[in-house]
Image (cartoon, rainbow, N blue to C red):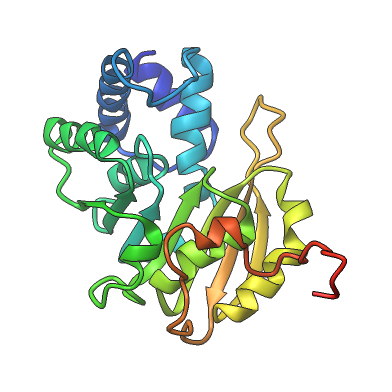
Length: 249
């Protein structure tokens, strides 16, 4: 992968960029490859696919009007190797990003990226989403809460919406599975003080990936009982139809 390849791909996908973005994405990519040799950060090793699946997919919402264009504070929940938070932070230097992950090893990598690229608009946070969203300094403090490839929508809503201020939104990068998740997610969104806003197709030229960006507006305060304690959102997702037990429960 070269800086020219990245710059041309950004341009062909309609993603606004300056001369520095392609250079910094290449530095990020080289660090990802270096660290991935000794820890599990990505299973994708083909460079063309890495370019599209990691960097372009993270940035594709900037190719059309989205809430990210008006945000001043964003939290990336379950950031992993930094997607989509690091590419977005590089592209939006005036926006403050918080990157949250439960695994310290991933954050060690992101600290190295932050230092090497001199990224000043990123804070790194080691925590589970359920615990962090109960902190007064984080709860309802962000214009946008974002996540990519983290969980089904009804689980994701409980992770994201408590972080979002009223009038802000949650942004969820999803594949075609979102269609089967919508009914349960609508119930969860209602319980958490949100409202489904838009589902925008996010095609990547030359790929047949059916990627979409699901936007959920925060309309009322999330009840204090949410998020539930760590592990509960994934074990007992909000909005899911309970399995029949034969005991009338």
